[in-house]
Image 1 (cartoon, rainbow, N blue to C red):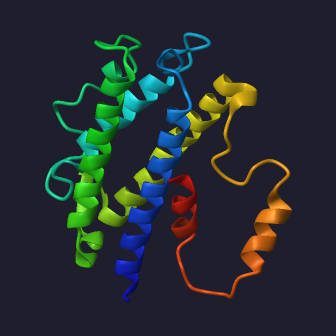
Image 2: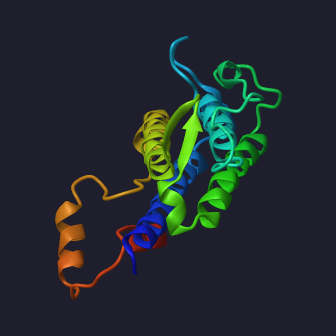
Length: 193
């Protein structure tokens, strides 16, 4: 398989993994916990979701043909603590809509598209660079969601990765198997289901 195809498949798998990690963290929370902010300078999980939604729609709608910062985007409003509906269902609809826009764009890309120049706020970059930019941006926010959820749940938290003090068992299981070529998310996504 050519490197560009490998790259695109890796991006799809990694982003699905991070999406799933965040969802498993969100699933552990009560609706009210999604809207908690400890101070005025901290975003709630709901606000992070609203921001990611806005970013994803702006960046991935007509990805190869229009500027990634759409005129219709109202970025500052994404960080408003005000919500029409403070319910989990509405929030998860925003989450799904954003991710669907991302995955639709990524699935439509061909290897030759990676070298095309796209613009974000009039700054040109290759499509590959723009993808890498979001491959850092979205997991950054997923990390915030997971960390914040873990803090809110405290001792009631169900680990989403290798549980504390279980590394030796995890490694023993991995090394007990034959070597094989596969993406790290293959097993991790199965565990999260």
